[in-house]
Length: 112
Length: 116
Image (tube, rainbow over all chains, first blue to last red; front, top):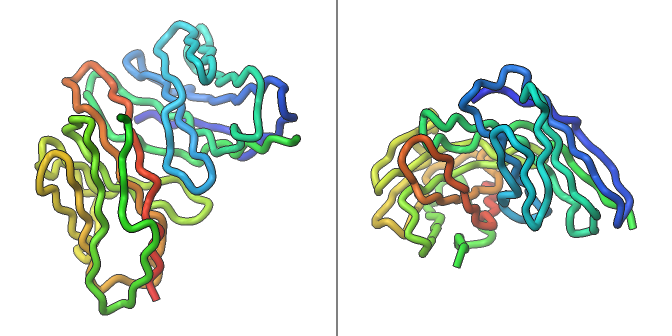
């Protein structure tokens, strides 16, 4: 899987939007961009994924750059419960269901 | 039900003990995974089972022995561990669709292992 780069940590105020960036300059045409997060004392959980178009679900939005070399996870209104480590992961659709390979992720702190 | 359960939640063992970690899912998933996570580090893949057969072993020492007795259960047998094996052990599962798709992996809460 291609490599991703994320900031080590970010901070947000409660009820403010949060934009978590991810760079993946070596992404291939068949790589999906996945985001997982790990809340304290829990296992990772799926957040969202996309290929080329921007995606929305009940948890977040994913904005993908036109050249696909970067993406941004958007939490529209951060809550204290969103404090977690967020992982941006590339998965190649051609090779099938390769296991998740986690990078260092971004530790998000939310301030009340 | 999208739950992966792991038992025990916590385990303390000596270096000469033999113990087992258990993972269970009832989502009909055919791929199951073991990850190891040290404090403040990302999870690292250890083993992958696909249709109850071991498909990936990430060069894990033989003191860790995985077992998949059926499609719902995954065990990790531990023997003669070292203190540096202390970590959070995470189990995950996914549907195992064919290629040209990417399954969501569902994780359990983990077993926190301390080796004395």
